[in-house]
Each structure stands twice: as C-alpha cells, then as structure tokens.
Length: 297
Ligand code: GLU
Image (cartoon, rainbow, N blue to C red; front, top):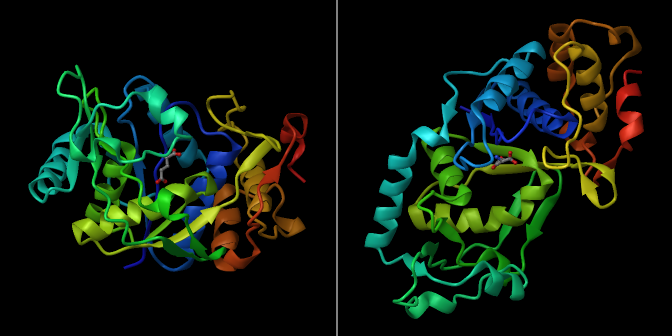
C-alpha cells in the first residue's frame, strides 16, 4: 500500500514551511488512497522538547490532518538503530572517526574518508561513519525528474553514530522509513542533497528504495528559509482554514473562491480530490515576513 509520512523535528512549533511539508505529504498520500504516518524525529535531546511534539500534533489535528496508526518517536527507538549499526559493523561497513568538526569545516563540509584506515587511537571520543560504497548517485523525483548528485556528495562516508553516542538522523530515518513501510518520501527540498547518501545506506542494508518528492522551501528572502531557528512565526491553530489556503497556494494548488472560509475538513476533501503534483513549484517560494499574515485570500 502507498505509504507516506511527515517526520518533523520538534525543535520548535510548526511554521508555514513545515505546514506546507505536512500538507504536501498528506495530500500526496491521501490522493493515492494511501496511508499517512507521523514520526517525531527527536533524537537530538538538546534541540527537541516534548512540548513542541505536543504542539505539532495539536496543530496537525486542528488542521484536520489526520494520521494513521501511532506516532512513533525516534528517542524511543535507540536500540533498533544500534542493532542496525551492529549489523553494518559486522559487515565492515562502519569505521570510527576522530576528525574534528573544524577539520571537516575546512574540507567544505564533505568528509574525505581520512579515518577509513584507522582513527587516532588517543582520541577521547569518536563518531562512527558509514563506509559508503557509493553505488547510487541518482534519484527520480516525482516533480523534479532525475537528479544526479556529485559523486563526492552521494558517496560521502557520513556519520551513523555521533561522538556523544546519539544515532544520527541519516541512520534513524533510513531505518524508520524501512520499518514503517514508507513507499514514498515527501519532504522539503533542503533534504534533497542527503537523499542519494541515504539511498546508499538503504542499498547496503538491502532495503527497497522509496519514491521521492521534494517540496519547495518557503523563504523569508533569497538567503533565509523560514525555520524554527530563525523564529518563523508559528501557525496558529485558531485559523486553520486560512493557514491551509496559504499552504495550498504555496503548493501551487488552486483554491476555488467558494471554499474561502470553509471548514478545514471541506478544504482538505477538495484538495485531496484535485491534488496536482505537477503544479507544485520546483523553485523556492519567497514570502516576506510582513506578507505572511495577509495570505488568506
Ligand atoms: N526531521 C526532518 C525535519 O524536520 C525531516 C526529515 C525527513 O523528512 O527525512 O526537517
């Protein structure tokens, strides 16, 4: 069965950009008669807060975005990620790395495999990296077509376990998408660069590769995406209809005039029935902060 998911990191409340991601993945899954799951990516205990998880789920509910099954939280699945890590280790697909963040920054952010033949034995803490065979470098995106990554990006030996012992996002999300039977990943285009890397991990683990659809980002100006970090205004659960209309427009979906002011359920019914992925823009969308509040018409 077609299965989609929305996988927010609860480091803040939902803003228009994350509502668009939630709505885009919901519409895609529901328009194909599929399941839609919600997964909370809360491994980073420093950035994530349980109150944000609660508020995200409340806002989804207020907008009529009903999910299937139980919400899973990554913080409760550590053992599972460590089990997969052990499996990879047993196949010599993991190695310890003692390189500093500074060194990697100096490399331009992409790791060069320096510790492949051994980490510094004196290092106080090491991270664990994927010995990436780099088999896959291209993906087919539903709206963007074939995307080929630079080999040094797709075959990067990325981190699986951070030096503080926390499983990394790339490991956890690959394992979860597999375990939850996700057949298509719909998410923000900021994650496009990591998709080929994640596909290499799926390949190494023998997991089927899902489909992909990367949604446009909503930017405050050409350089800044709205994010929890730059304190994007949270979407209010008080005006779900207005928020849904703003998000539908960002996704290039038509909203007939007679649905303005309609109940969220009615809006969503219409949006599911008429969902047109090809109308979703592939360019980022710029909405200056002062225009955010006035997008209800
Ligand atoms: N947790 C990520 C975020 O909130 C999304 C990860 C994904 O969809 O793979 O940006």
